[in-house]
Image (tube, rainbow, N blue to C red; front, side, top):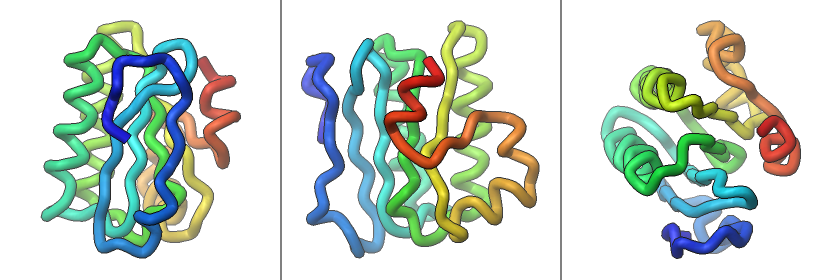
Length: 131
């Protein structure tokens, strides 16, 4: 789901379910950037996640949704990418909203208190409504 420059909602490719790691970049309505991650997001895959986020910012998208619903594992490196995104977007008057509800993501996010740093919602629809 590479960003095709349109403002049309992008969808998650179900063929990626169960892969070790995948990242997709696109846009949602009203020029909201979208990153969809699948699989394990750790020290070896976080650089690709960070590059995708940077590409959205480079494209002028400062409101970003990161969909983690298909993530099976997330480590501190990936959490650091999320915090870095908040720090990058804030001075641009942008916001980061995370879509997550599974134990694999919610446990580390709540244990670290990051659920107070960025908004976490259970669906993309709720994420879009935040903006």
